Image 1 (cartoon, rainbow, N blue to C red):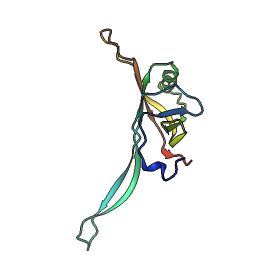
Image 2 (cartoon, rainbow, N blue to C red; image 1 turned 135 degrees about the vertical axis):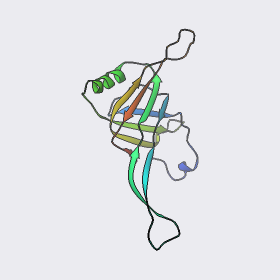
Image 3 (cartoon, rainbow, N blue to C red; image 1 turned 45 degrees about the vertical axis):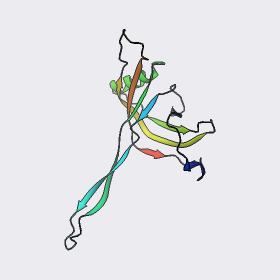
Image 4 (cartoon, one colour; image 1 turned 90 degrees about the horizontal axis):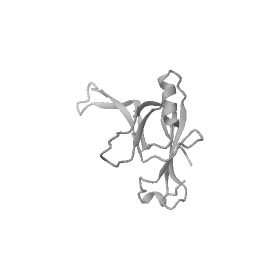
Amino acid sequence: MPSDNDLREPFLAFAFELRFDVESYGGFSECTGLNLETQVQEYPEGGWNGGTRRFPTRTTQSNVVLKRGIVDRRLWDWYFLVAQGRTVPKNVHIRVLRPNGGGAVMELLLRGAFPCKWNGPELNAAQSNVAVETLELCHQGLEWVPG
């Protein structure tokens, strides 16, 4: 993992990889939704007129959205199992890599992830765009993996 000196410079967002348990499903062009949000309970305390007290309550996580050019059908097969009622959760590791190939700057873990939405490519014979599929993952928690 990086030293304190390494973290002083921002790292580029294009160098990342994803692994599902131990297998790789090819490269992804985009990964969004790495969000945690803690809800806040406001409490107007009697006798204190300087405002309201605020206390953290439940933390929620967003679904993670992955985009890539169609490579093979394993992601579709994984989603189709869920659609048939046979959920197969996987631990998904997201690694932000150093641009020079010197390993990971950070690694995040989506614990118990499963696909909850699949979007096929937009097909248009008048354009020459890459056919991109989108997979949305629900998960049981986002963690920073110590390194």
